[in-house]
Amino acid sequence: MTRFAKIPAARYLDLALFLALGLFPLTGLMFYTQLLQKYMVFLIFAYSLDLLWGYAGLMDLGHAVLFGMGGYLMALSLSARSGVPEFMARYGVEQLPAWLAAIVPEPAAVLAGILVPALFAGLLGRFLFFSRVGGVFFSVITLALAQAFNLFIQSQQEYTGGFNGIGGLPGLSLFGRPLTLAQGYYLVFGLVLLVYAFCRGLTASRFGLVLRGIRENGARLEFLGYDQARFKTAVFAVSGALAGLAGVLYAPVNGMIAPNDVGMEFSTAAVVWLAIGGRGSLTGAALGAMLVNVLGNALSEQFGAYWQLLLGAALLAVVFFAPQGITGVLPRPGARSSPGKAAGKRA
Amino acid sequence: MREILRTENLSACFSGFRALDRVNLSVAEGELRVVIGPNGAGKTTLMDLITGRTKPSGGKVFFDGHDITGKPPFEIAARYGIGRKFQGPNLFENMTVRENLELAAPGGNTVPSTFFRRGPARLRRGAEEILGKIGLSEKENLLACELSHGERQWLEIGMLMMQNPKMMILDEPTAGMTAEETRLTGRMIRRLLGDHTVLVVEHDMDFVRQVAQTVTVLHLGRVLAEGPLEQIERDPRVVRVYLKSGGKGGEGRA
Image (tube, rainbow over the protein chains, first blue to last red):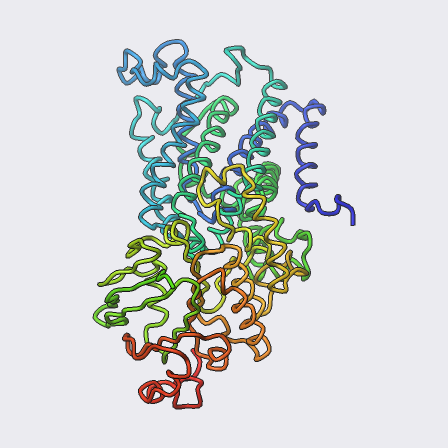
């Protein structure tokens, strides 16, 4: 057997996806290039959730809160570049508050957009995991948090634009220089590759092994000398930083951000991507995010709002026939029995 | 011989029920101690208290000169060096045999020591040797859930070898095994002696006769008798509560 044969099938899927994404702008289809740029931002968000849910088994039903922190901080920074933005002035804000003035420079906004959600996740993890909150309780708490964050954003109208969100944002820029669509596309693409390499490296390291151990049998891990609360908190913070980065990119790429992007709706959307694509391989997260969004776009043109029904049917089909998602049915290197059997046992 | 484990008046209460009542136990370094007793005698509870799974309602546990009473399990495992095999295999089901062993390797138990690190290379090589010892070399890439019951028990013993703690606690290592598997397991455990102190909870008297040096008998949460196996087997109190039905344990296997 050659060394080559040991590479899991999933790696070829990663490669194929990145090739397709890298070459797509050459088609010259501007509209779809712009759309794919947004979906690549979702890809980063999907990787971030996969670290947490797919590897460590922590199903975050409010992951968009972390995404939204990055997104809103960036959106505020962008809209305050030339003084007090209009939506703030409408509420009688005459001067930028100090915290907002501090994140007006681009590097400060990017840094804040990554660090604030990382810190928030780290703190939340410190309180939840060290108090032995886990499993479904973690999901319920994060779900409630998503709703609370959404309401918080809507209630702080003078700083968040309330229900309407913050719109009219300029596109991606780098060091203060606006980027063309192609440049922006490849900036996001480059970041996707970086985040992918980061996640691959992290999950291939012993840290990733421990995360999977937590998912499989966290209590057992303690008797091998691991403090699982520390590992959970660490992965939550890392995942928060990546979700924040996705949010930071989303604001300029999408041109606006609204409460819907940061609440339960978007959180559950990401959970659906992973459920369909498959968890704990990174490949499945990417596949699910791309598939659901690309198909969603195509189908909503055809069927309007009814496409959600089709998505629901697809989700049910996956849960029944491939509980580990699409990548769950791929062959595992060195496996004896069919992967379907192993996957069935896991479920 | 130096004393490595001592419990002083160790007690555990579960909503009024005294599962363990002032148990005093002393185990010497390098000893193989077998704990027997009928179901509900408090054997597993005793192991839970030593490894930190349950907090005692009274009494103390000393290990290697340190008071480890009520410390969390990860600290007892990593810092003081007590390893444990659970009753009925307790594995990482959807991870390969090799990954199960790698997780058990000591020396990489903290976030910084694992973050973007492969873990100690010396110990990863150790996995090969242990795979041979537990007879699973051919199956290192199978998932733990794909193994037979006996193989799963051995994998967990292999994880203990990998962890290489000062003291190993084995809770019914032969439960559900065939006679042949039981004999092999006995040989595996005897080979661990010399390097480790071993504390075994068992029901199977054939197995106990194969491995035991000193036996402690628990009954209703108290130490009923303690001493060399021959003496224990003649003790009328032990025979009455435990050995009466042909040495298989009064209530049979758990």
